[in-house]
Amino acid sequence: MKTGVGHGDRVGLISWGNLDAVRLIHSLPKIGSVLVPLNMRSSIRDLVAQITDSRISILVYDPSISPDVLSGIQKSASGITMVSLSSVATAASSAVDDEELISWDPENLHSIIYTSGSSGNPKGVMLSFKNHLWSATGSSSNIGLNHSDRWLLCLPIFHVGGIAILIRSVMYGAAVVVHKMFDPVAVNHSIDHLGVTVISVVSTMLRRMLSDREGKKYPSSLRCVFVGGGPLPLQLFHQAEELKLPVITTYGMTEATSQISAMPLDCALHKVGSAGKPISPVEVRIQNEHGDPTSRSGRGE
Image (cartoon, rainbow, N blue to C red; front, side, top):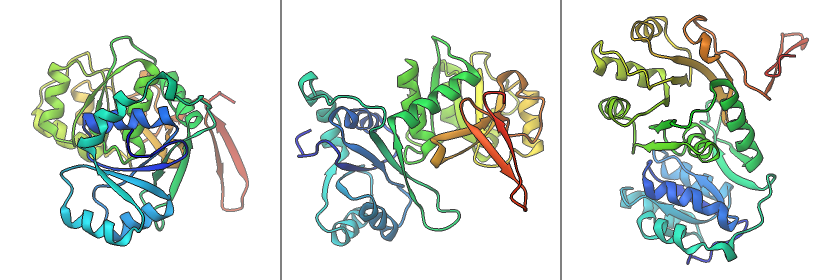
């Protein structure tokens, strides 16, 4: 990259999902830079707070972002360099040759991803390559790998679930179908015509997909639908069951690089209300109000 960014520098990315963003996300590790995806929907105040907190030195922004937001960031985040995504993404992926690659260490920091802030201000979670690797390993241990897998990305790339899809798919050697944002008509079209085999959604997204579907069954090539972000309503569960939709309820958090637990694929429609079992090698500790713990592990312990 011709922006002076190098090893250890934090690079902010504020963008919807698109191929330029994907190129940049995969280019940054090659030069040892740390990815910091920022929420496109955040206020200027929150964006500046996260830029300052994570010590971002360069902010790469989507051309569609409001000029008022860009101006507000520029005024409040002193010393930051701002560059349009369209001007750097292709250059970033082509300018890094073999001589510039850093030595890869699984303990290196890969990304800083901010939590939703449901219990206070969003917190920047520091995730290593190893964190992403074990998350990918755990997910594949549950649903397996298929040489023809295509994972549909319609979650925000500033959310750990969206980033996880991109990282996992590279590790799996699987294709990704990238959508700018969620649209039920576009999602259903991709499932029908682009060979999508896996998709991750929340229950509201699933409801809109089924509403657009109007009772039409999904192709057998769609082998897994992860549903997280909260409980799956019983009525929606039964709708999915009627369409033979392979729904897997899951629970995760940013600190765990996405998934913590998920239903096994062969039990997807048989445990209503469950978020499944801890995926290997995750360990879950549950304790009562007295602090007395019970443990369950993805290793079957």
